[in-house]
Image (cartoon, rainbow, N blue to C red; front, side, top):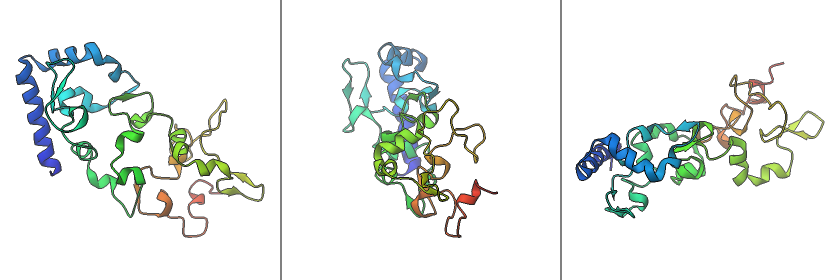
Length: 208
């Protein structure tokens, strides 16, 4: 199914959802929130939530409790991720010479909450903590030695009164994504910049 055909299917699903209940979308959403309100609580709410539950959960008979699935996909989703996600998020933004393993496997909800989160980007936890859950080897040894001290580069998980600032993104804290792209990259190890030219990657921040 192409992204465009999936968009049409999602729209048709939303209309079918409305016809099934015979009520305005606002009333339908209010009915959903009676049980599922906690899903929409967070500092960041997925934009799709404003479009109504049927935007993604099109294959479900919500008039029956417990809900009856009308399709073969879990939770009544209109399509399996990542196809469902690509209906709104342009697929080419997740493609590159190097693709993060979970992205290539379509594991969007491994890192992102599909409804709401207290973290930027709908992450399920702070960026560096998220990364270190899988990349445990990074904490076992110094990450990118600093000069001759043998100290490792900060990882963004340090507990400090004042977090390390991100020199590349003013107003944000330093984390793994300061140097690494979380989804795709044109460079090895998912780095944001080409590090082949000597200390090229380091000099993006350490200019003096």
